[in-house]
Length: 363
Image (cartoon, helix red, strand yellow):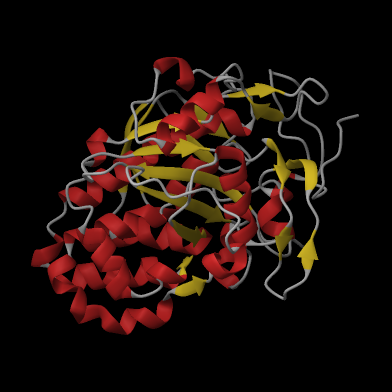
């Protein structure tokens, strides 16, 4: 029998082993997070952002700094900017519930997490995906209601969000990486779908035939233009690629993110305020950020500082992980690769090729 988890969710599979656990509806989750798209979107339309001040009320803010206090990594003078970007599978609202498969699933999970590092100079970026099934040490945290949650060892990474909340996810990432997180962004199911539809779809080069009965995705190898619903299925598919684990689809998620960012970058948003408003409205309605970015003015100011970032130059990396020896359906950070990767990000340095190699690939 597969070893249980702190959030009661089924094992994710690894090393080609047979998956076990609860019905697939509980395993569904948003498999890529696109909040970072809003940053580039607003950068493209930065000179007309004042037209959309009414969108401020759409954005939900979380006071990360207050929740974490002073027990945080030092902010180095040359460490650039670091964003923790999450995808939430919240079933709140009719559209989110329908896209999530319905069912008696309460609360939300952060099934996708990326640390996006933007070096000084804002000309390139790197996105590090943290597999949701990574076993981590959750530090002592405080919930939104002020109650304390003790530290716990060997908890699944994506359980931290559902059990304690977003501030604790930030704290967990900071503890495991020693990287100071400057900003937090989160988007949900409906936001993902509406965002893709608002820009007219995204073209991706499918690396292999995908026939996934669970998600309903049926694609042949080669280029396809996907609408919002198809895109959601693409980034969520697990049975259609690799060994059926979360690791196998991370490559699809990262590929899609770059394709989406490139699509937004290629559109002349300044010439169509109506289109820009439609896209921004779709994004902000499903967006949660830290308090420092929880207004269109703040988002636009930050976005304009990133105008030089080209999606084509963004590097995507999966945190190096290895199958856990006690539970092969879970993974742990692979050493010394993971420490080397985080050190390079902390110091705004070039990431060595050796730090990008993961013993567990999901293939």
